[in-house]
Length: 383
Length: 237
Image 1 (cartoon, each protein chain N blue to C red):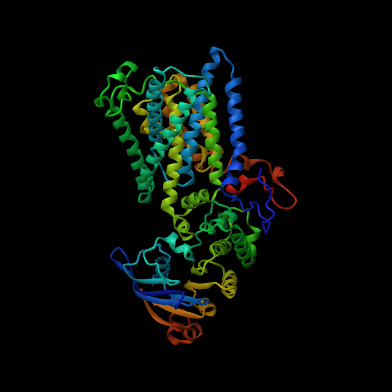
Image 2: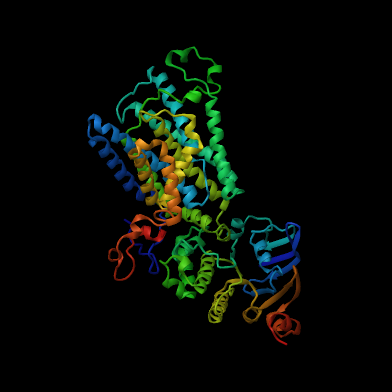
């Protein structure tokens, strides 16, 4: 992985890691390429047959949950700002991308049917829509990040929660969706507020979300998260979590770091929102911006451990698969969740992995080296 | 012109006047200490200089630039770095990462590595613990780390807030020894201490602060010999 740096003047478990932008990109390229390869493999080797369709949906849900939980972890876990409004960014990304694909498809191809395969023109429109949704969510993340400069703890949680609830109510007041025929005769009245379905939800979006695209974005999210954690900005975020005062004394611009954390998290939540909106069998509803969905992701990050990326991935997977197994008791899902959380708080208040990563628990003999720690054990430093 | 000039600083905590016109100056190359009893305003003075508190009145000129009302990260950029009181280290990060955070505002990799090496030379104990989680260090080691971390920021003026707080007497000796060495190596130091005895041994000049006002100032040796200071701060009868 990381080559030992000959310039390092003293024994060090982590040699200077800044390589400039190009070096960083080159270093991030192979995990992303690997992720794309895995996503493609997943997509093309997924068994056909009706029975597998259900599992496919679960795996899609897991991927989307991973993106949302890991991105929320940047705010809640790494930077220590308690946000209860993460689903709002999902909704912003979902609705924005939905507008682009739905009305874009009608304009381009006169219908909202799928256009092309997994890399066809329709899919690229979808990817563009997701990125646009992510950018709009980023802008919203900036706005929501601002109160975090003055508010702490519970108060920030209330503001972020309020943001999600406000968005939910606003989305309920939107116009009905325009069908292809109505589109030609539509007037400004139909477009203000935007025709995204109101309380019914944004129906009839083309279902472009595939295993391939979901896991490409999962790979991107994970690479960004791990790199961020090891970067100067990531350290600054953790320093804000650990002790704002000391962080300031080191010259960390606390305000900037907090807002950055919100923006990065919102970007990926918006991206996941695009994937979510275009998943088959789902309708994006105003409810998805609200508190309950946000709480799902908060639970995942709490369960995984603040700042532990692998822990959060595991928690996101568990908590997405678990309700499927508990389908018969769907009503009691929340009770199970609550009991799980209470149990966690009692037994492991730091989450499954605390601030550690899974590989911090590898056996001793694995790391023991004659002189210094092997530089490839890079995540160790995050412990 | 002095490296740091503080003039008539007035600071309030709400309605409470914490500093009532503090003036002091630090020349390049000096160790200056600010001594005083609990609650006299020592830490408040440091925090105001480093931008963590906003003064209501007065002037702070560092390196020829007025820096009162600057945000802390801007102040650090000018080379005025504080090692905060109570060993505020990042306990869930490794020692290594703590040191890296000291260089947060710097980009010159080679120079950072050099400064880190230099900082570690002052504190061999810290070097031994680079991969360790900082919260698991002993109190003395944490204080060393806090100072080393501040050194990695390459300060023109290093401000130390109560470096001896809560340390064993043996360690206090070590810390002050290193403070002297750091100064000899060319870093100007403003030292805030309750342990007036040690501080006056290390410092060139000293200020005595009482309820938000400077009561006495002068060469450290002279103050250490003065009856008032001996009675009030050095435990002599």
